[in-house]
Length: 248
Image 1 (cartoon, rainbow, N blue to C red):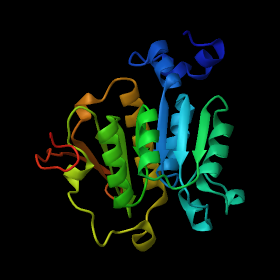
Image 2 (cartoon, one colour):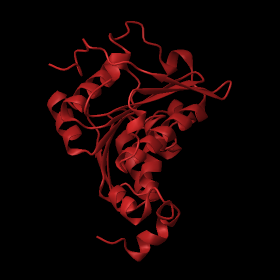
Image 3 (cartoon, one colour):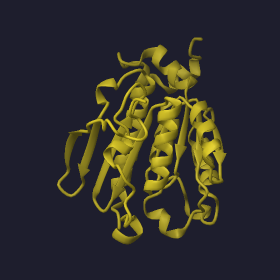
Image 4 (cartoon, rainbow, N blue to C red):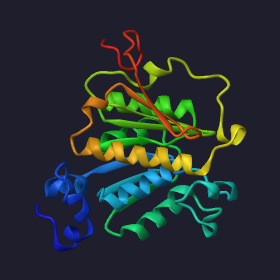
């Protein structure tokens, strides 16, 4: 299916790239991406994926917009306070790219619903802020053999990792057990542009994976220190006894 003249004009800067071209742009237009969490990370990730031409975005978040969110969660505006975040983000994204099909799931998905949504997607973004949900998403993505892009940010530090089908490591190889005393942004604080950096990097990594690139990033954990403006890359080993991705 050829790109329309309107699509060629809108996505011209991407189509010009040798690594994308018209065929790559069509792959993005055909893609369905599930984003869980529409806060500091999910906001920029969703907005950049919509701008880049992802055809369908499925947004899952059951929280409501609060005034304290506006410092960093750029998909929400002052007049969105009190709205469900999934619906608020949908309004913003449709205003950014009306051709993007946006589905808002504004309730907490149980295990079966989550697995069904992961299976229906070409790629999943974990933009949540707690280990329980990350572990749940990790299990579902590994089970459904769907690529998962995980982001986390707190204070002035952030990290991104891709979990790819066809062999680990997975997120539970990195964190074998849930942490009892998990640090949160509400407790520790977070610098507003930091979540923009990490969320945008999630969108970039997701786009590369949807285009068929990024296999060399398997097992790579990217760490960002916003205070020193430095990056570090760490190879995550696969745990042979991992309860999620170890061969059975």
